[in-house]
Image 1 (cartoon, rainbow, N blue to C red):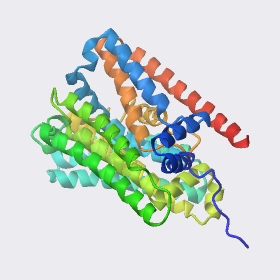
Image 2 (cartoon, helix red, strand yellow):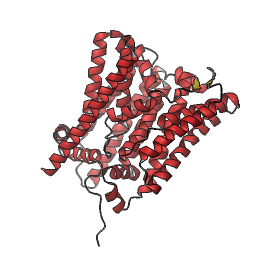
Image 3 (cartoon, rainbow, N blue to C red):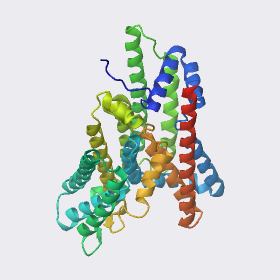
Length: 420
């Protein structure tokens, strides 16, 4: 009896990346271009629509108000992205499984409430208060991960119940006052509002990142050459490293014309990079994509599906709790509105707009980064134009609908291309 294998519904994005890699290894820069074109023709648009859309949004708002692209406004925009963007990373993970968690806003509010009550009212050390908030998020995910595979209840129903339950728990933790201010001299508030990288250090980090990227590619190419396998050309590695230097260096230089790169936004970027590494370069990440592509095939291939579900829901709620901590630091308070309003909608919309598929198995951690940049750009641009928040909701809804339509059409194109 042969052992079942996961069909090529393996993460489509991962499979496409591997196809691109093979083309690059054969023909260098030309292979990069050919691989990109072949992916687009096959319906795998990746982040292209999001990047184009973001550039169009920036261009339109710049025409309407040149202050939109000023260094001061962009620095504020990055800080506004960090908290909800961190929550959106967890949403991306859940979407990769083909599931959803609408309770992340309530979990973030509960986290903020625990932080403020324990630190301000009970006098706990700040580090212990933050740790308690994160542990609370971890336990919420543990509950979801236990209930979902054990009883077969749809994840939407379980997490919807959690949305209501943890919202009530957050209000109970806050007590009758309903609002608790966090001292401005606490390091969590300073971290979220006032701490920025020195200019020289930001440039050093950019250079080190590019060197690490190029060095990793060179090591991989050398190992493949020693094993008599085709390897990425040195020219291609140099070109791609130079491109990364431009992508990272120019925005860093521009932000440094104002206050620079905020530490809270840097933390968000680090979380995105780390999670993307685990998704694409580890067995756990491949299992996440495989389950999102075909859960039954993944189970027959020997993947511990329940364990993966458990880990993903725990990560999602932990990211939500961390986002709540960052939001409380940014606001210097926790109140009855923490985690409420449009927090849920923006976190989920950011993941979908950024390229995470609602059908599962497609997307990356960078979806959270790109999506939240789109949403916060719309919010910031409309604020500068003094337009009502109702306009922001309508525009964000239209962008979300467009993203879902693009995802559906590209999925249909991939299916048709596969049959052909």
